[in-house]
Image (cartoon, rainbow, N blue to C red; front, side, top):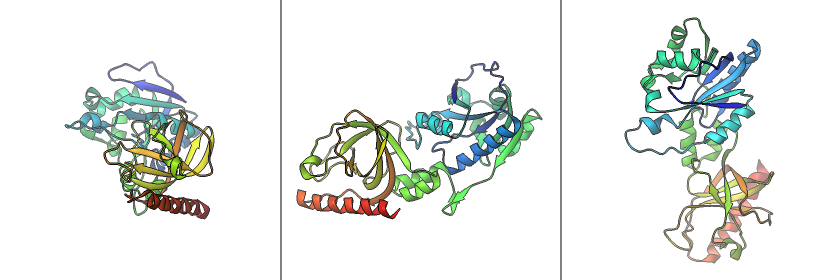
Length: 311
């Protein structure tokens, strides 16, 4: 897959490879997004054209919000690229979302980012909007196309009695409802990062953990203890993860993400790692002594083993 970065007002008329273009922000590349891309892929295959996807960076709310805003993503751009490649996308267009770009009228967007890119068929969800303040709607796109490209609108996709959306998934993750989030995503929510040194207190109580510095940009689940899968050096292990502040030992510590990897004894400092989040067990608790903490960790380990044994 080739990734092409566009920054208004750069001229890109030299890109005249005819293509089918799927439009969307695609944070999470969830089941609804996958349906849009799969439909675009089907059309591209039938017409013998390249499959292209257009997304934006950063999230429009970062630019359009009147207050300073930092967005946490389900799939930061690098991971979004990986998922697009896995879906068979040939060309990924990443448009830099700026104030100038946001001021384009719907007609200008169509001319500069669809017609000038030799798009022959556009596929997007029913609620996709484009142009200044989202004034352009999918029902209007055939008029703007004026016979120069075809348009396919993908209907709303539902699960768990609601529309599948990045906003809904984000809410589930922030609430610790990873089972529901994963149902809508179509895969386990995953964060990536690096194994770093911690205070090494876990090894003194029989529960050595891998401390993970999660890459900036990922949405972090609610504080607490989770059943997870941990991937490092090409291998996947079962584990239980804790997100919290180690409040049993002292207050005012920085947030840490630690994984007790079941049946694992390797040294992996500095390695890239991935955490797949599956199920929330309990909130972070403060214990009066180490004995209470150890007893709870033993229960957490038993719960983790049972959770995966039952899946």
